[in-house]
Length: 192
Image 1: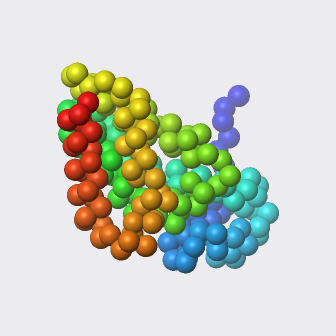
Image 2: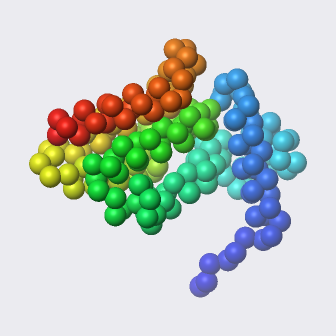
């Protein structure tokens, strides 16, 4: 049986909801402040539309995160640039980490909201994808040992709550965060 395409109005509603949620998370003081009622009102739909389309708040946050991450996933899977699979691993690993850090800086409250759900961030599909991508790149480095642990440790350096803490509480500028992460990744790669 062929897969049914969503109705045009359902697809429009979905995009309206994701755009509204994106705006609300981008401008909120805290991710906990953004409710399903707020998102429904901002999107001009009923709350039932949100629950039918996404299940719950966590499902909506996951869908929004996945949609915003899609261009990076595409570049990692197929891109000819520094994120792409043809890039030498010593260059690709820092580029992957920088892309993830920049994504979390650009979508900080959304990332904090996703990682702050009741689920462990380590069980999330996006974490599995980043972990597998980094681990695979590390395994391609000649002489590098324990790529599995190193991938987890490198991902810990870009957890959303840490990025949020460093930018909000410690007022670390974006470019310094990027430089510090690049230096940390270089030390890990040299030590491997």
